[in-house]
Image 1 (cartoon, rainbow, N blue to C red):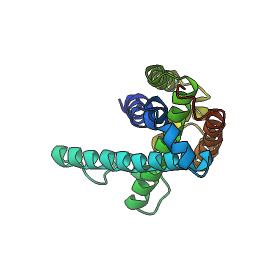
Image 2 (image 1 turned 90 degrees about the vertical axis):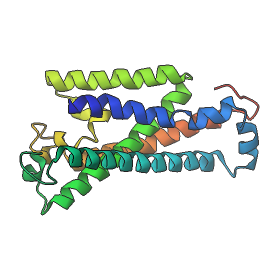
Image 3 (image 1 turned 180 degrees about the vertical axis):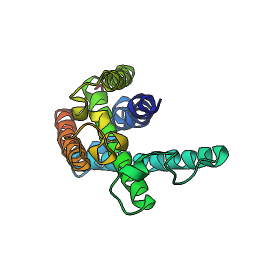
Image 4 (image 1 turned 135 degrees about the horizontal axis):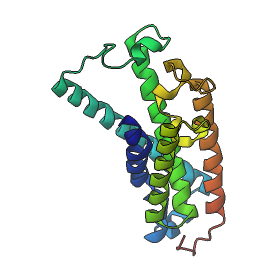
Length: 209
């Protein structure tokens, strides 16, 4: 089912790709060489954030390519009401706008999930447990989706799923694309500074986080 992929598979895989980009520097003792040569820890974290963006770009491209291959093999039409009702419910002029909206929302959601994973990896101090929380969170999302939880639109992994928004005919009237973009962008900024606060508390000689 599509919600299992969006709630569990994609967040878990993407989190696994970015969880260690800061922890690895500490655990391998590279941080004692990096911090003295970095203008500030803000710049260090900003570089890691840019890495998350690039990983999100490659991940998005990989998903798009795999969907094109599957569509070609299964002969799924590029635009057809039998393929996906989004093309008929969304208020856009053409199919390309629908695809662009879907891709942009998905990409932004990946960056958001990446920042959540980065924070968990530093705060919880255990990669396996951090992945476990991401997976458990996905199951919580899925359960609320199945049983019709009214606050599902406030949960993080829901934000990047286009078909759940009211523009696609969803019953969640308050759940608009504008809400999701604001939710994710504000959360990214907040998490960024939360991670920066953790880094600022670390001494160069403190290699275990």
